[in-house]
Length: 495
Image (cartoon, rainbow, N blue to C red; front, side):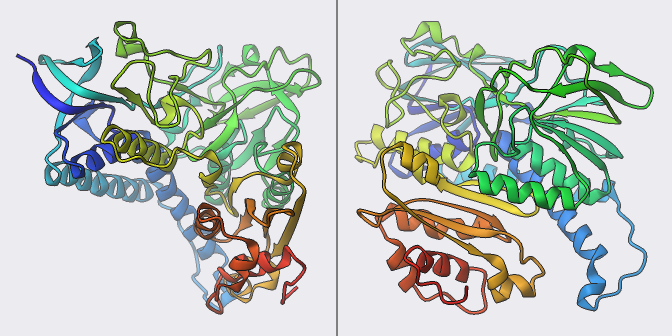
């Protein structure tokens, strides 16, 4: 006889465990199915994405600061980089958070099943693992099976020469002294920044004409200038020929050439956006041959739906493999919802968790606000950081808005000078007619934190004038938000 629940969640990432907790708070009896080895919850983000990546980026930041300490009067002497210790700390952070999630499941009385979940019927789920099979019945089902790294034909991952982001954050022994990175979205530029700080020779290959191509063009230009100043080689408007890949005794060799025709399809990925998995790279006709110890393929992600047996339901997939849902996460099957990467949108952990909360609150009759993609902050943790939400000026004008815009530099902010990070800027895009905020775009120190103030202002229909009236502490980096807000109407004080 099948165990019965108010809600069965298939997938334990942010789009799964977070709404499972919220559903428990709303009085539901909840089961959560996770197939990851060891039953580790947290999905890509905790296990092979956001958390381990940012742990390594923190190591890179400390290494950079140590090498540049003399400017601040701190003479350290010879600096030694211990990668195995950095990897050990990375794992300690991940494991601590894993234990925390286990405790949250117990606290909220959520029954966790380790195995692969699939539909027998729309409200009957089979859980299979190496030890047997169980069946669960549910009033509601939430699909949150997420996404996985993708590659291109001819560039299959081997974990050593041709690698994915997953391979990097599970490698405990060493790192390459030279690397070619295909794709310059969030994943590509974060690892480019990290490896450069580690001392690796980095080359980034991007099919489109600028790096981080889904960001504001001025953000792309500013990051390119910073990266090139650090010695990172950036090949934009360039395509790689997968068929030319050679694995050598010392690494890899691949041919690249100018991308003189065709456009690259864009997808969203964990931590940000990058070149799509279906990009028509074609054959490189002549061109340049690149060599390195490793090739990181950061060209996209694919949804994970193959094992769900969706044919037993009325759930529909789009041409891109994402699950069709309405603004509350409802699929075409009554009582079945979906959230996270599997439904498309911004493939970001914080967006996934929010989508899941909306779904379970709707199940419970709470009448939540629908998901608003313009309120999703997009953050990239390279050095310097990038953060944005909403529309760029060009996008707003395409939608018919009469736009006013500000751009305030970090070099006019005292705390940025104190911290030795004066480069970058904060930009606000607003509607001239209503004065409402349409978007914000920033590059510079701690902008991944600062952007939240703008997201909240847009949520409550705030205006740049009201942001400018907000008293920001001095000296702090947050002053740039207030100054940028005042600059929208030409009232900036310090620039």
